[in-house]
Length: 128
Image 1: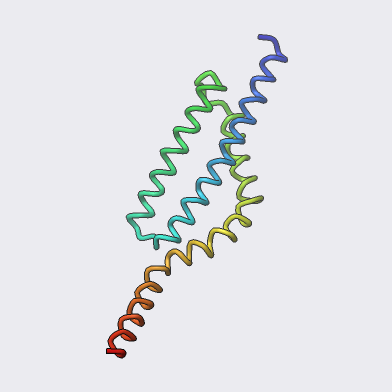
Image 2 (image 1 turned 60 degrees about the horizontal axis):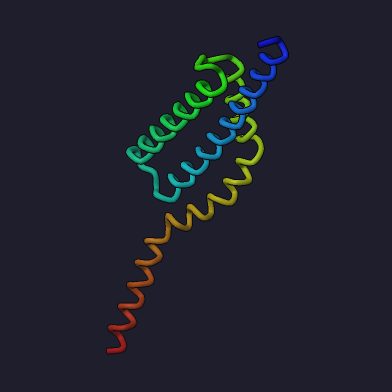
């Protein structure tokens, strides 16, 4: 493989690693919204963090294996990190502004259902 072929392969690996970083950032925000919706305790936070770590490791392993001949290269690490930074600087705040209210609503929903059922029962008992 000539110099042009090696550079093209490294560029492709960098871009796929950046795409992985963007995807992992999005996945992290989904898990963050899930934590908000379920009322994250220590156990849930730990479990979701482990899931994120496993998915991140598997994704990086796949990119490294497919595009870096199974070797951890600086351009793969840099691409993944840069992709994550670009995600958190770019679309993440907008996405969280959409997900956070929905997550808070879901978190409060059981309490609202209980209040509604109590009101319904008390009105039903008053009518008897």
